Amino acid sequence: MTPLAGRLEAIRRTLPSDVDLVAVSKFHPVDALRQAYDAGQRIFGESRAQELRAKVAQLPADVQWHFIGHLQRSNVKHVVPHVSLIHAVDSLPLLLEIEKQAARVDRVVACLLQLHVADEPTKYGFLLDELRQFLADGIWQTCTHVRLRGVMCMATNTDDARQVREEFHKAYSIYQEVRERWFADDPLFNLRSWGMSHDYPLAIQEGSNMVRIGTAIFGPRPLPGEQAE
Ligand SMILES: *Cc1c(COP(=O)(O)O)cnc(C)c1O
Image (cartoon, rainbow, N blue to C red; front, top):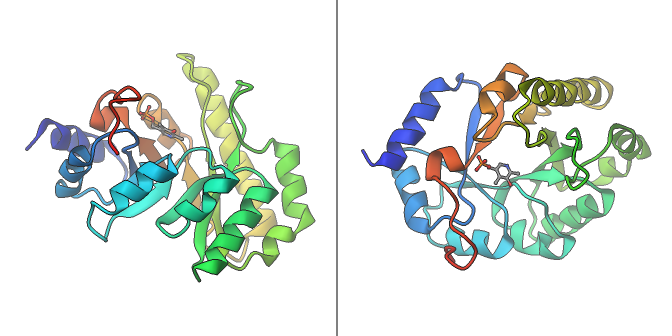
């Protein structure tokens, strides 16, 4: 077993069976992804359109690719053909672009709504009022090539576990509100994507069922310039 496979296995052992593991492979070389693949990992998370495309071509077809980072509208057309889940939808214009590009390639693309719960101005995502407005306005319901599957968030990058817990807790309560109000008849609106290398045990305690783990599997990310392409 390679060290990478060992780390992956150690993480898997700690995850409850209903929690999906997204191996966040952004910036890491294809060789590292192959090691994870050979150790049984099938869900990989990427955050750049170009890099995603290059890796899709080099890994087996049964990999499920998730787009996890901020997605620019101009990149949607490069991402939509390849991914099984887009984690970070945070505006109507982005959703409409996904709808358009998914229709073009005759796909239905699963998406999560990104919530802004962190205490950091630079993080993307809907504030609660914006999310309520987005849902009430109803345009999303005309997007037949998008399937909303749940919510995602990132907590503040802090050592204060109490604060991180509160943010995940808030995300869970927003998830519940949205599900009850808009998706009561849709059992597939069930994904809660939160938890990264440093906070995933807490995230699971606070209702996550999809963790996005990079560093704890692959090690530190290579610096730009040393990246895989
Ligand atoms: C990079 C990234 C991760 C993984 O972070 P690690 O700390 O390496 O586990 C998770 N989620 C998103 C949105 C990311 O961009």
